[in-house]
Image (cartoon, rainbow, N blue to C red; front, side, top):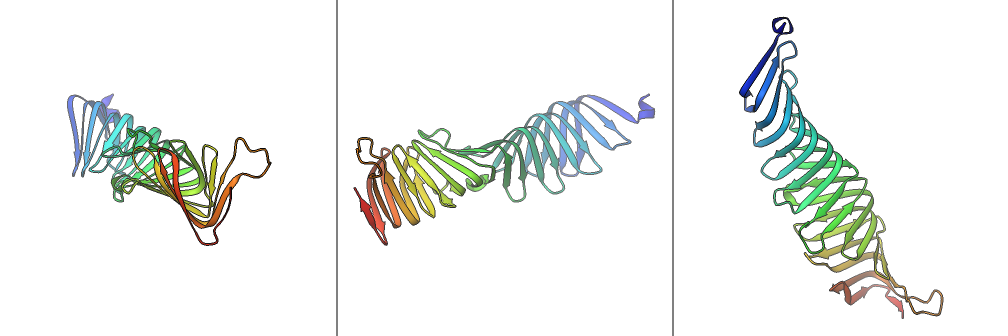
Amino acid sequence: SFTEKRLTQLTGHVRVQQGTFWMTGEEGEYRRDEDLAVLKRRVHIVDEGWTVVCDEVRYSRRTGQAWLIGNVVGRDSTSTLRADRVLYERTIGRAEAFGSVELSNREERVIVRGRHGIYQRDRGEGVIDRDPTLVSGPDDEEPVTVVSDTMRVYPDSARAIAYYRVKIIKGNTVTQCDSAMLYDDQKRVELYGHPLARQDRTTMKGDRMIAHYDEKEINRIDILGAAAIRDERRDSLVVGRDSWVAGDTISLYLHDNNLDSLHVTGHASSEY
C-alpha cells in the first residue's frame, strides 16, 4: 500500500521547495523512506540564479543531489548548458552532463559540444572531455572550429583552452598543435607545442603561433621561435626547390585569404 511504501503521489501544479531551491512539475511523488522527490512533465527548477527546464527531476533532500532527465536546459546570467541528463550537486554548484552536451555563452558566440562535461557554476568554468568540438562565431562567414581531446571553457569571458591533439580550422587555414588558447573577445588564438599550419600550398611552423582573425578570415599570423614558411610550387621541375623563408619571428599579413606581406625578424634567410 502507499502507507507501507510511505509514498505520496501528487497531480496538478506540484511545487517542492527547500530553502532557496524550488521546483515545479505537472505531476510528482514523494518517497519518505528515501527523502526523494520526483517531478515529471514540464519541470521547472530555480536555484540561486540558475534556472532549469527538463522532462523529469529526481531530487534527494538528504544529499542535495538532483538527477535532471530529458531535454535538459540550464541557464544562469552568463551560460547555457544543454544535455540529455545532468547530475546537479547543488551544495557545490556542480553540474555533470551526459549525452548530447552543449555549453555556450549567453550571446552564443562560443559553443562547445561533446558527449560528457562538467560545469562549475561558482567559477563559470566548463570542461568537455569526450569528443569536444568548439565553434566560435557560428554565424560568421568563416567560423573558427576547434577539436581536441579535452576542452576547458569560460563562457562568460568567451575564452577556451584546448588540450592534446588540437586541430583548428578557419576558412582554408588548418592548424595542428599540442594545446591552444582561444580569446574570442579579442579575436585571437594562441597555439603551443610546435604548431603546424597549412593554407593551400603553404605550410607554416614554429615553437608557437598567434593568429588574429575577424568574422571573415584570419588577417594576421605571428610565428614565434624557429619560424619557417614553405610554399610548394606546383610547376617546379626541380625536386626540393620550393620557396621558403625562415627566421626567429615571422609575421604574415593576410587579405581575402591571400598573403599581403610578411615581416621576418632575427636570423632571416630565404630562397625563391
